[in-house]
Image (cartoon, rainbow over all chains, first blue to last red; front, side, top):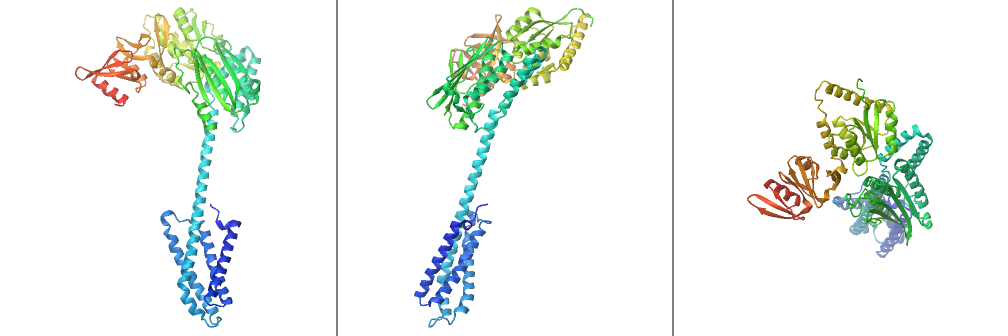
Length: 347
Length: 263
């Protein structure tokens, strides 16, 4: 719920000072009209205290019931009604109390003559306070809604990023398990190593925090695990080349960004040709960016890599967009029978 | 089993370890001999044509052409036990058409069940042959299996044909139009025409209707290749393709073509 304006110390102070000033002004005005100082002060303090209390009451009540736009005329009627009530209370209290204590001018007559002006002023004060409160609460509510919307958007974005990172290909998992099953019979030691690699890989895959960016060196280690597993499966056909500038190793990048690109390159390379396949991974510093290239062979006769984000790269594209709100960080290039995926991460 | 002839099998899988485990499980079947292990569909086709095996163990996801496409290219394909890791389209194809399949990784028990099931069928088949009956191979079921499998995403992107002993993979973009030709469909591309023994209605079903329109009883055109549509005789049109080829468009075909082109 929105906080009432008078619950903050600063506003309460302004509110009280306002009424003190107003009471003093009214006192001096009443003296000008010929009331004695004592009577003027009593009249002013009493009536202004009541109006101030009513203003506080209205302002606090709006915390629980805020008139909607089409009900703004409520404010008018409530202010008119309460003003009348305050005037009656003032008359009933002040007139018997101050009658005869004011020298020549009779206080009763003075009050009767001034009631219309008093009513106008009280009404204006109440209406002002009501309108200020409505504006205050509306803006609070608006801010809360915006906050909620932002939170919802952030949650959705996080969930989407998580999902994009989590896209573990079931094919990869089941085929790896099948390889382990085969190795258990013939070379249990190798099977154990493979289980180790697979578990480390899966553990890395379960990392959740998108904010925790990792150095390139760590990503490359993780990639190494993945490539080890793939080489057990396709050892006879798959080889990899890693070529990086040592200066890049400390560059930070979102976790699990390279593996899907390499996975895509391997899949594309292995399933599009029957010859041995070399996947080349390069990393270079380029101004404020670290530029990573993944290269795989393909058969231009049978595959048409689409410009931009063909071949399952769309989820990486989407992820980069969500992280950096830029659509230009992922590029692909075709060089004869080589397909090259280029990703640039701002540093 | 009464017959003394060994059963001849071939294993086709692109992962050596996956072939190894089938080999290992087959050790307990003295009467099944593995003639060859193949790395991909091309080797598979060659081996099948050379040995005419009784049974093949076939992976689905393989380089260049997948297991289903390989089967399409083989005349009189042998009995198949599929081995695959995960492919929802393939599983759907298997389940509706009752061919046995093994999901990797599979146990020895599951493997034995599949092989025994096949052995029973094989024995019945041999017995029928012995008394001179035509055992009528399950060609219809196999055809249905291949047709269901061809709705998988990878197969909607290309057509695999055999031409002069060679295998040709045609990306759909390369197709100009398809033409009915007796029991075959002639696929016209910018590299020439290829024959595939399928029906026009099969292609009409499998191909994306927003890219390929059946403009005539005997023609399906690739919409992207259309350059001009000219009126021709009463109620019919001629469609001129970017290659210059002229394809007849019937009255109903013209309506469909206009809808796809947004006219």
